[in-house]
Image 1 (cartoon, rainbow, N blue to C red):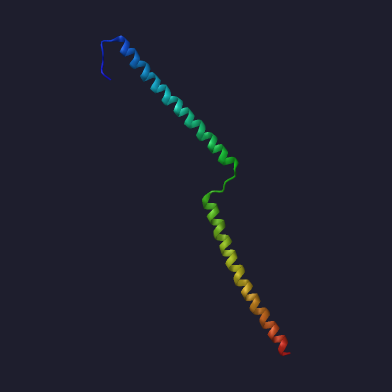
Image 2: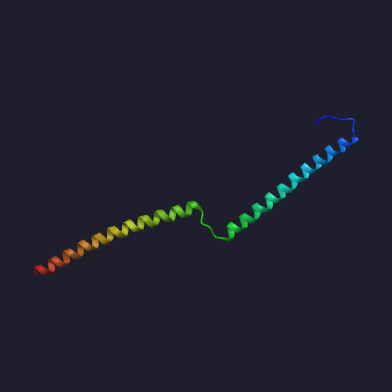
Length: 88
């Protein structure tokens, strides 16, 4: 900012500079407060990390596929037993 010979304008400039610095400080405090509150809120909600969710999802898909394969195998075995009984 340019230097002036007018003490009034110098005083006004100093007030605006101080106000801008104070506003930045208040904003930083608000940002910190909001961030802490959001982190606490998320922690209280018991969210599952994405990696854990994906791992459990993969395990469930594998278990479902194995279950379907076992059901098909059981069905074939039952058909075989019923066919063998009807021949007797």
